[in-house]
Length: 328
Ligand code: LMR
Picture (spheres, rainbow, N blue to C red):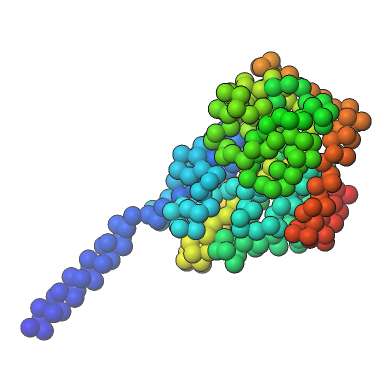
C-alpha cells in the first residue's frame, strides 16, 4: 500500500541520515621515510593535530614514519593508487615523474638555505610545484631539511679522497653524476637500508643532512663527516590529483591551510635541528668532523660543478639562472 511505501521511504531517509551522523571520519594517510624527531616527522604530526582539531570527526590523519607503510621504492606509486594520500619525498626522488626538479640536486648551486627559500618562493620555484600535474601528482609545498654533508669511514678532505669509494645515493642521476665526477662509485639505495649498508661496510659513505645523520645514527657507523654543505636536501609535499580534487572545496582549503602552517613549523625545526643535531653528533665523539679550508672546498666545487652542464638541457638554463639569482 501507499502507506507502507511512505513508511519505508521515511525509514530509509532516517537511516541514511543516521549513517551520515555516525559516518567514520575520512582517513588521510601520510607516509614518510624518516624518524619522528626530524623536520618532516614533526611537520607530519603538526599537520595531523591541526586537521583533526579543525575538522573533528570528519577527517583523521594517520602518520606512518620510518618507511613503515611505504618506502622510497614505492611511495609515489602508492600515492597514485590512492593507497596513501600525502607523501613528502626529497626533491631528488621525483626523477621518474619530472626532470625539472633535478635543479635542486645540482652540487654547489645554493649558497645557503635563505637562497633556497628565496628560489622556492619565487615564480620559477612555485611553477615547479605543478611540474608533475600531468602525471597526476600535485605539489602542495616545499619543506626544508638542509644542506648535505659527506660522511665516510675515512676523512674526505680533497675530491681524490673519494676515488673508488662506494657512496649510497638517493635515486637521482644528478647525484650519480656528482659522485662520478670525483671517480667515486654511487649506489642508489632506499633510505631504510642505509644504516645497515654502512654498518656492514657494504658501502663506504653517504651524503645527508645533519638531522638525518643524527636521527638515523649514521654517525655511529661512519668515522668522519666532512662539513661540505655541497648540496640540498629538501622535500616536496605532494598529493594525488584524484584525492585532492575529490575533496569538497571548503575542506580542501582547511586542509591546505593546516599543511601550510605545519610546513612553517617544520621549516623552523629544520633550521634548529641543523645546528643542534650537528652539535649532538660532535658531542657524541663517535664521528670526527672534517672542516674544509676555502681552498680545499674550492677543489670540490671545481670537480663537481661541471655536472651542471650535463643536465642543463633537461632542467633549462633559465631555471638555473633564476636559482643562481637567489644567491644574491
Ligand atoms: C634520503 O633518502 O637520504 C633522504 O631523502 C631521506 C629523507 O626523506 O630525508
